[in-house]
Image 1 (cartoon, rainbow, N blue to C red):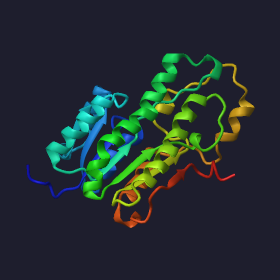
Image 2 (image 1 turned 120 degrees about the vertical axis):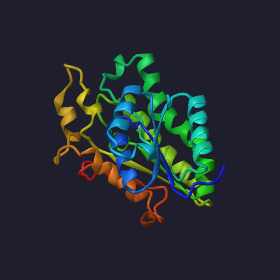
Image 3 (image 1 turned 180 degrees about the vertical axis):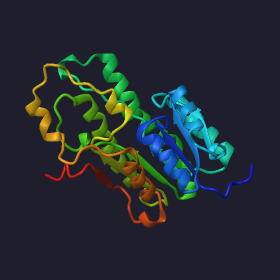
Image 4 (image 1 turned 180 degrees about the horizontal axis):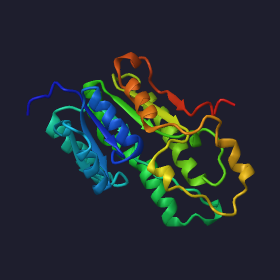
Length: 250
């Protein structure tokens, strides 16, 4: 296996939303991209939309909640390309529920995708990123930085991602790898389109985190990811970058 001179980026949650936008953004930055998702149809749709860039984007059907699948997919990507320079942990799920009504299966799914998925993927890829002097980006949420009613499970996972990012940054501070997190506010994605809240919520508890500047487009988040993995951001390590229109400023 000869080492590819083209930089390789891996994106989880690539079939839709921020992940899909990030695939396109990094392709435009001349990366070879490996797109990971559990959504087979979504990955097929992504591939058909690439308009001539299909040969620079490989897709991998992977459940990030599975340690074995994360490790095997990351190893497969490295074996094919000979390097991994960027890894973006974007896969995530969200739902709004009364805390007392969260089922065990709902809690475990949220933890599995949003928190364990970031951990297992990071565990698998960090040795390769150290080798390349690469960049790890974890997509958290402003929900991990502020209290939000009716999203206790989701907020717990995103707060965990933020703490994980900072701890990873310290553990690997003496290597060449850079590890950062992004904490978006609301983003206009399929996740939001399918999002619902319980009918009997107190809207006074929800209004404080609705923000004043509307929702971001996925490309606005992927552009920040593109910056963080570039050489222009080489001094940024262990940071949590909020992209929320000022929501967490107050």
